[in-house]
Image 1 (cartoon, rainbow, N blue to C red):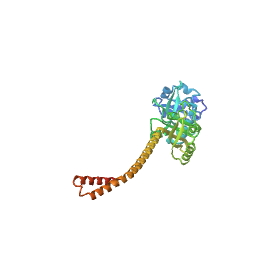
Image 2: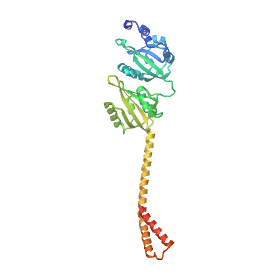
Image 3: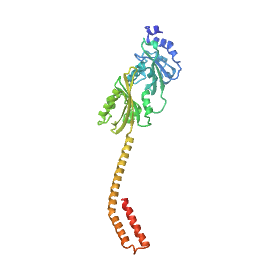
Image 4: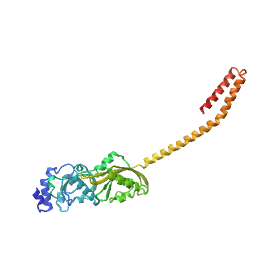
Length: 346
């Protein structure tokens, strides 16, 4: 097999010998999922299975074509992202079980989302031009994906919300940022816009919050801790929104930063409700204070007449007790007691 791979034959013969000798040990041509084997140096596709042909419409004749490449399936803005995934999976075995989501283009031009896993084919090919085993599964849901990768899915599950939520990835190898469908809704940007970089993403941050956001991002990257902040943005339609951002750094097997992946949640309505509730509480406290002041004044103003009622009642009872007998004495006594009770309440 090694002699075949090192032979000066053309790409077609290499592809044939590769699939005959190596691919059969991995999975049959009718295996579930879309499978392709590509050469890393130029992303040339050397093998596809029947599911690949069924969904993406490329067949064995296309595989035999000298220029059939995985780039035929991807929009140009996704090339750096895939390159980063392949490099990361070469360095880190654990990351090979993690997927990224790509919009792939079929032979007829139809675009659909696919979960893509990638792994080096076999250790015995280390000395050769590296090959990758690509396993893809179509997303058959009718809804836009709320996340873009395995890492952002973890954040999605932690911070799940059916609306006003999205995830992003910032690729360190190339200054590109990838948004899920939810972020386009939050920023009110047309989903046709694909070329997004850090500068464009930061342009939505409210000018008064920009400095603190940059400081927090730098601190999170430096200390390798999660970024957890709240900020204001101004959308493409000039609406001001309050956003909660949770993000974390993803490193390769050597500890080098690969991605900055995170989630954004629109908490504008929630913060407005909290602000309204705070205003209501402040209004209630103000009303209670005014009521307390009124009660104090009313109590103070009542003290003098109550004191006179009590005083003159006592004098009547003392001076005319021999005249006021029976019911008269009882009424006067009860009047004095009630007045005294009211004074004590004040």
